[in-house]
Amino acid sequence: MTEKAEFNAEEWSTILQGPATAGLIVVTAEKGGSIRESIGIAKAYAEAAKENQGPGVVKEIVTARPEVDKERYKTAEALRSAGVEGVQEGVKVLEGKAEPDEVEAYKRFILEVAETAAKAHKEGGFLGIGGTEVSEKEQAALDEVASALGLSESQPG
Image (cartoon, rainbow, N blue to C red; front, side, top):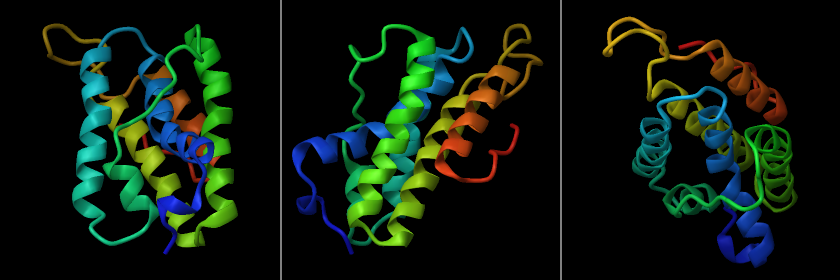
């Protein structure tokens, strides 16, 4: 099992930013609901922390405070393009030092964070009635993140 101590501070920061950045890519894909969706990101971390009780880098990632450099992305479009690259960079850093199953778990966690954010707020509808769980724009962002991770596309909500 790989441990946090095997990474320098810059590498660790890059790894930690991946999941939260993927969540923010989805949050900014559609206007509205950003508070609920941000809470959804935190909820994904809490759920993953419950499930990952064993040793290793994935447990350390899911139990860490989500990190995002808020000054790095000036617009939603910059977040979407550069953010996807940042997510991929986190995977590359992890691939260089971690076991393949840990890398796969990290990729799945990134997608889980993004999906949880997308499903946290219904789009459309009126007073909570109707609407869709995941909008077309959010689904496109989810699919882009999944593709960047080399995972099959996420399932529509």
